[in-house]
Amino acid sequence: MSQQQTSPSSSVQEFAKHAHIDYIQHLEEKEQTTFEYCVTEHLRMSGMYWGLTGMDLMSESSKMNREHILQFIRDSYHADVGGFAGAPNHDAHILYTLSAVQLLVLLTSNIEEFLTLEQIEKIGEFIGSLQKEDGSFSGDKWGEIDTRFSYCALNCLALLGLLETCSNYRGDKINNKKYINVEKTVDYVLSCQNFDGGFGVCPGAESHAGQIFTCVGALSIAKALDRFDHDTLSWWLCERQCENGGLNGRPEKLSDVCYSWWVLSALGIMDRVHWINAEKLHDYICNCQDTEKGGISDRPNNMVDVFHTFFGIGGLSLLGYGDKYGLKTIDPTFALPIDALKKIGIETPYTQRFDQ
Ligand code: FPP
Ligand code: ZN
Image (tube, rainbow, N blue to C red):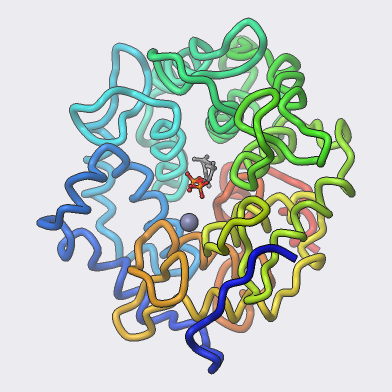
């Protein structure tokens, strides 16, 4: 059992759905003048993905300003390189390119309503240009390597129908062009696995639940889940549950709501969510809510933000509280609702399990 943290509230709360809908719906207008809003401008694209996906999981995405988001995506596109930035006038980056494509999957009935086939191929080329000889990926032209970027590359190509390992592959439309080397991508991700079963940011780096999500997610998209031992990793992941019910990201760290996603998603991909005590984690997440103004924070009584709000909702969905609270089922590999993935023809073991 990891480091303990006392919860200030012993009374168990229910998920405050309506408050969260109100919180996300009014985020833009409420926060534009704050210091926090200004210093997070460079990652606004991901902020929109967290907000819209959170709303979609609560079946309230129609309350978001669709045209505003689409215009923001248009203004953040770099036609010369084929990638998207976190906000207009910033550089293109693979993280925000994935967020932009995820937003488009949610906002369009077919991505070709918004992007031409040439633009889709250009995004594929941007992602391909970031792969190194050893199979790793940098996030942008500046070259930092991170297993997060391997996941972003595979996820983004898959959503666009440019990945041969996925059911929605549009090979006939693109002359079967390969944008990345999938085998090398898989070998590199596997080289980041440690003796404890976890994965790190690069070979030899400490196991970290955030990186584990990206590595297991990458291997899931590449259909390479049979290439590592699930039991050792699942033990490490379920040891992340603290005495207070919350999950941490590494041994001896405090619990944090976002790890409800990073840990549970990896366990979900390996079909082992039940290795976590769901009731205790539910209570921890609900104790981190602002039940009046809405939003979820990292720890009880801290400031709420859209990042932890989304990952708290996603965590409750993965734990199986969808029926109780009217939440859609989220896919742990792609971090999107499964109805959105079905719409674009993507099947995962998880979407198939929920088909029955
Ligand atoms: C912890 O970060 C989380 C990670 C390292 C994984 C981040 C993954 C992505 C950005 C890929 C895209 C994600 C989705 C859901 C589509 P942290 O910096 O908060 O870690 P810390 O708790 O150690 O500070
Ligand atoms: Zn966090």
